[in-house]
Length: 321
Image 1 (tube, rainbow, N blue to C red):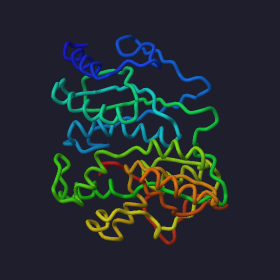
Image 2 (image 1 turned 120 degrees about the vertical axis):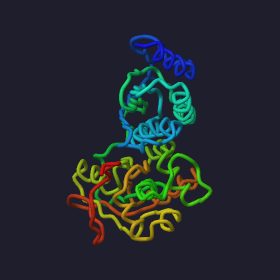
Image 3 (image 1 turned 90 degrees about the vertical axis):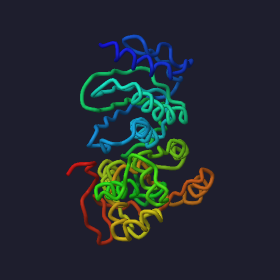
Image 4 (image 1 turned 90 degrees about the horizontal axis):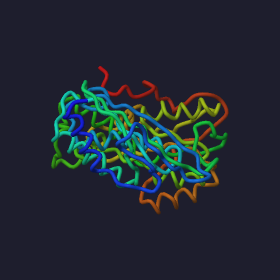
């Protein structure tokens, strides 16, 4: 390991904090952790590659934020409380300015959700970032994909299609991802692509109501398809009920906005199923969190995911041509 790599590690380590549940953190061959009693460990991992999962010109702060956000979204979909994470960085060069900005974005989100960085690795190579995130959930309370029940409502949080809409605009040369814009609709979509909001608090609340859940990373229909397949049921989606932002509809038009909402990815909203008698309780949850959740369909006997006369690709292909 070069001196520059040691310097980068020291800069990252300086941003971490000591906690009682971390017996030994950054600085040894591995970390020692102390999970809470009677809780299960929830573990997820994601890798983001430049030019595949984000435009190469994306600012370092936003890369840091999104690198952690996608993992927190997985924990949210399981109803887990974030606890610890590791970070592996592949960097084409050891730029101190870049790593400081990256760390600013990473820890801005980490501090919001009380998740501690406990170790990782750095190496030289094409820009690639891998996080393994760990959370905890009381035994038997984790949300899963295989528990949807016939008669359940299908719900989604927030709005859908914004990130895919931003990607379309970027591909058309109409959106610059490197800096904020005073055009409100464009800025709304830009931030939805670069700084997704993991719905951690909603996931924790849903443990009392939801039967099955998944986060929307590859597109609504693709990810809802995981619930349908794992649960052995049919998901019926009302395309007219999809929640879409005014910015998405204004910039792309109704039809293209709907395509993004159905098939686009990178929203990192939660899609979940719950019994019909939980509607009032879920509306209360939405109001208490100041976060819209929308009923978009229902679970039936059968297989697959179906919309009312709407065809298209099954999911998100990131930045592939």
